[in-house]
Length: 152
Image (tube, rainbow, N blue to C red; front, side):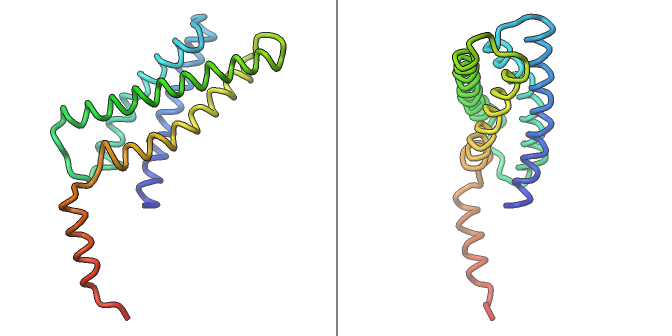
C-alpha cells in the first residue's frame, strides 16, 4: 500500500504542478475568475492524472472496459473538481471577509492548496476503491493464497 500511495502522490504532484500553473496563468495572466480558472486548470491536469494513474500507479489492477473506466474516472474527477471549486470559492470569500478587501495572490493560492490537499485524500480513496479497484474474485484468491502460507 505504501508503494501504491507513493506512486499516486508522484502522479498527483505532477498533476498539481500542472493545475497550479494553469490556475495562476488564467487568474493572473488572463484575468479569469477563480472558479472558472479552478475548473479549467483541473480539467487540464486531469489528462496527466488519468494516464499516470492508469498506466503506472494502478497498472497491476484488473482492467474493465476502457469506456467504463473512463466514465468512472471522469465522474470521480467531476465530483472532486466541483468539491475543489466549492472549497476555493468559500475560502476566497472567507478571506475577503476576514481581510476586508480582495485577497491577494498569496491568500488565493493558499486556499487553492488547501483545496488540493483535501481533494487528494478524497481522490485516492475513490481511485483505490472505485475506479481502479481489484476484482472481487482476485481479492478472494489473494486472501486464500495468503491464508495457506504457513506461519512460524
